[in-house]
Image 1 (cartoon, rainbow, N blue to C red):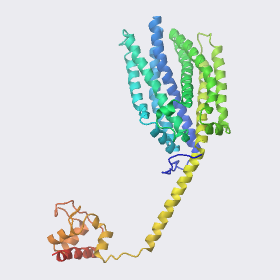
Image 2 (cartoon, helix red, strand yellow; image 1 turned 120 degrees about the vertical axis):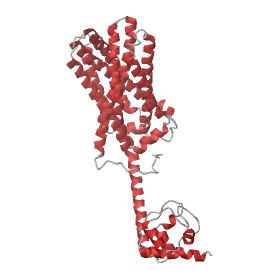
Image 3 (cartoon, one colour; image 1 turned 60 degrees about the horizontal axis):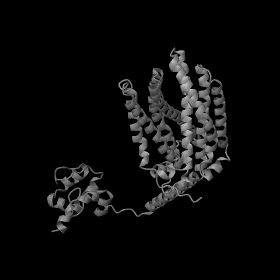
Image 4 (tube, rainbow, N blue to C red; image 1 turned 45 degrees about the vertical axis):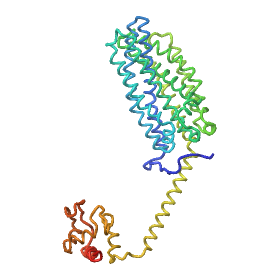
Length: 442
């Protein structure tokens, strides 16, 4: 393939001697932690607004209590999601620097929405949570704040998914000019579908779990609502996700999909779907139970988390096959760059070794070798006074030698001259030359 990649600045992956597999595993783990919080953020914020509205229409305070409690999960998830989100980005930027930052440049400046969009969404969600009781008699306005926060959160995956889809498909760099060229593509749409389905599915099992805990603590009515609604969320989102997951490896470019089929990674989405089928049947079997135990919910959560982990590993597989050829080319470019640099340095050292020794008895050559001419010239004032000015002002050799060796200040209304690394004999050669300039310029 005729790669159009940023090989003009070859890059060495800074792994500190650790194998790349270590960083790959680390990237998968931190990504799973991050994405689980993000799934809960999307789901909990959406649930809070939905059940706030239902509480108004049903005139049921238990729905209102449930909606309010979901704001706690929103707050925790948005903070932890943002915190853990830094880790996978750092790992990816270390392993795939050229591709990662090229993709960011391609989708700029819209990638900045991750920053200001997050800030807006965070502020709205906090306003929604902490004004809950104060705006109890102004539910329409309060719900509008919550809905605005949810919509702000929903915009973030579109931008982030576009960037990640681009950097994992470097062959698209030559054809993608802005974020819209990658956002409105089947791969982004399909992966966003999987993202939101998983968010609602994961939130559903968490709602079942927290509902079981509330019932155990004696908060039966609110707990039953959480369990009942959690089952519905999970059973509605999971079947479609079971179908979508095995198709995800095939929405990338043909090169990536075909290469993935020759690796073990291709089986992981199918295993993930099988686990979700088991979880779906397990929850379906408990559908008519008003109350379930937290252990029951934990089994479903475990299946969902393993499923998410397998899909994260599949994503790593996409990177492995996608970057195999370009990374090899980048390594080749780096080796050629380093070989050329070493050859140039060797040539320089040889030229330096064969260079005739400088005649340091010549005052001009001596002045140049000591760096004097960086601040002084013969007849023009630079950082320091010209040598002609010095020769016209000072005729005492000892004073000039002392000034050169130990520095001087407040003599020529210029920056003070620091002490110079020079011997007395060398200073005398320079002083004789400087003083001779007065005679030659009369």
